[in-house]
Image: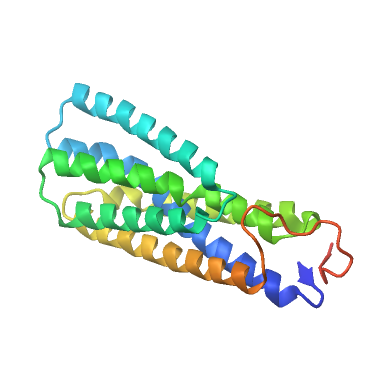
Length: 216
């Protein structure tokens, strides 16, 4: 896909963003199926689970709005680090916790906040900033499609991960996914600093010396 003098630069961006988004998407798509199971294991009533879900949706909306207000500014990377760490601690907390209801609800709430701060919105911002307009749609389309394909394959084994005997190891596995996408995010931030990409400023769309060409 990429040729030219800057192919190494854009390949680095591509790999970092792809690893980040695939790991984040696997967790986000799968964990939604675990929340109900975890609450049931904690003996939550249906009315409690419904109310908790409504509150968590509002919390997620607040986190999304908060991130949107800083997505183009100098504090964006700090928000990403906090969001990723919160997600990791939430997964680790679920892996280590007992079946007590409130610690589980708090962990799920923390994950909802972190997920919306260090997640898909960041992926889209990075893609917009890091690639010239002539390849941006191709990059994002490939990553989206490949990620969905992997999520579809992963869904085949999801039922085996929610059985009581496996749930703790599953949460440890989710913690590992957070660690991988956190590292990929740190690499992406390093690459942007290295190539002097300022948060909130898209890649030059009109420069003739990008060194990037799109192959058919």
